[in-house]
Image (cartoon, rainbow, N blue to C red; front, side):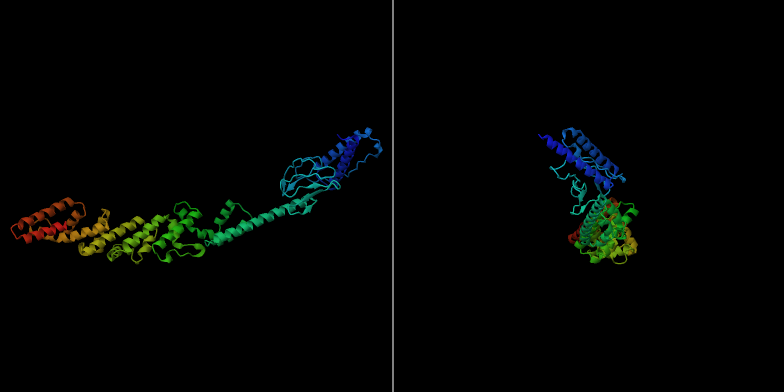
Length: 449
């Protein structure tokens, strides 16, 4: 336990420290709150000293209390708390923060320290001068709180700027890989200023470069479709390009221009053409027309004059031409080509007459393979059937009659009955003839059907 002499010495020391602290805050023209706190501490120390007077042998040597000038009190900005030493304000870039009360560290003349929540180093109070010393994160020392705060603000802005520079460099390098570097340069200042992701997205989408690069989104909206994300947009372009390469299309179909724009792809995206549909269109053009027998291409161009430039692939890839309509026309052309190969004609062999019959057969579900086989049968049986009908005075047996039975069209039952009747009449007529003659006729009919 401390002796009387030690306790009196502690009271003397506290009174002296309180006097110096009070003088310091007055001379520094601190806020009224700080001055009042310092004055309260001084009054408390003075009272303790007065109460200890009877225990002193030399009360006449009591320290004199300095008379402080009337303080000039500035407007208060910071919130403060008291401690065993001096109340210390904290202001970091305009933010008001309340300090936590922290006891003095050490003994004797050890300075009192106060936490700054990681912003700079802890300020210290020099008990010899009463000044508060502030140390910035880079080691620079201040005794003026306003200059200190201003310097911290500058450091923070510099740090933010450095982060922005680094972010810009990374983004530029990444976008440059896809030929989109100019998108980043348009918003360079916003990136370096540290705008949020949402803010940067809005700024980016407002640039001319962005609107040119992702122009199909505006067209989608005009077409009543929802815009797609940039990631989906780029992914679709990659899929389109891979499909075209795989099918050996000329590079002109997917060559990249300014900002990596592929003009043909814009129409696909604007009209909601999926990668699967694009592949279907290419297969239809290549496998069923371009790489097929020439009669199919000739029929297609003859049936449909709007396909008259010879570029079937371009016609097929144009999104304004519906895929189902394209397939319907190609099927009709395939049927027309099969008829041409078999030597079948219609009403003077005009393109309109052949197309009408081909479209009718296509609507009935007849495929290219069925048409090829069926027209061969019709070509072999219809002429002989017509001859027999004329010979026996029966109703005419025409090419149309044969097609009704062969392709299963309306009237097929009647057509089959008529053919069987003619075959029966032929057998009866030649039953007394030589076996060779009769067998040949029957074989022709049986082979035909």
